[in-house]
Length: 334
Image 1: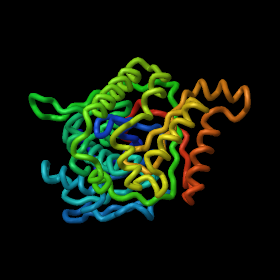
Image 2 (image 1 turned 120 degrees about the vertical axis):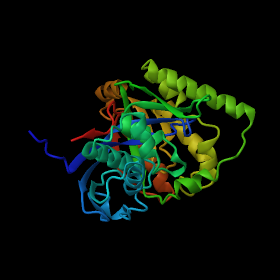
Image 3 (image 1 turned 60 degrees about the horizontal axis):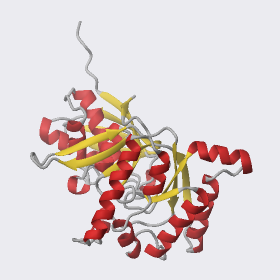
């Protein structure tokens, strides 16, 4: 019996949030929502077409040389000689250029579908490595989260110099509200150029301690320790805030004051998602529900209102709010 060759594959890929306070280029987490769907169909040699629909279709670049999915497929073709031609269709439900890892999700979905069609044997690290070729500087944080799900720690092996990924299952009680403001973000590479080449030793020590405690808290499912430690970063977020990356008027003092208000009033931790400008508000789902029984508003809704009001005071509207949580699953074939 001859097995029919698969010529089309479809995948669902989660958004991600990276950096998470002090964890710049080291940690990331997959999100239950939003997600994108990608369908890859084999076409005649030389045809490379990307078609996009969905909520953010008008904002997605469909040039195969610039779109992350197209760049990932070029890397696959260079290594394996396939696909020689394709039509890629994407449902864009992740806001572009808002720090939610759309490019990483695009690349992961394209490589996963190509692997399904051509049986390339790409799994785990090999799939992530191939998808990462589409990312600026080939950094793997968003790609790892979208591919594997969970909380991911990206490190470089000092012996082999290869990147390695540790994935931890996140606590079920951890909720995340994503606020997507109407702020135009510079490219991720442009925001990286603002960062200092060297930092004071005390800032380095503080960052190392923070990310070590956050990682341990995720491993132990200690939501309180996550909320206490996650928001505080002395290097990347303050530098980018003072460079107006997160909106004019949102300098390091404005951001620090906001984080303190959120934690003191609502036990909610705030981080900038990726390179911004989206805000991630982290909270205990059970604590929010308990508070809802007392006052009907809970904790996260007043926290969302506080951040929204402060942004609107600077003439920035909140375009969208996603109420989500960490995803234990990464990209899947449908």
